[in-house]
Length: 120
Image (cartoon, rainbow, N blue to C red; front, top):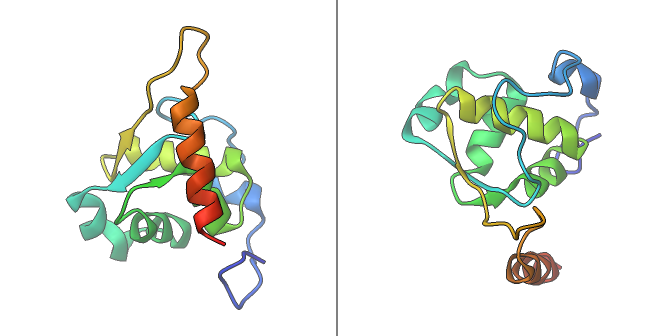
């Protein structure tokens, strides 16, 4: 059961991505922020349940990790779904700058931790 639903998930998590572990677009860092586009908001009525839920959630900037948490799915599943929605022009990505070693800057991680603590 996902944390925000009263009804248990009927479809197995792997079926949401059709068994894919890779998206059609670029792989996303979990700390990437995403927001819905105007086209994404207009598309909500024709989207699958999880896709529509992501678009509604992303009316304000949220991280890929928050999407996973809100949907109650593994991070890898959220990354595939978010990347697919971005590939279709329904979400805009805001990928954080990384250091030379590919890891996020410490300031980004500190803001993420502060945001998570504020959710308590």
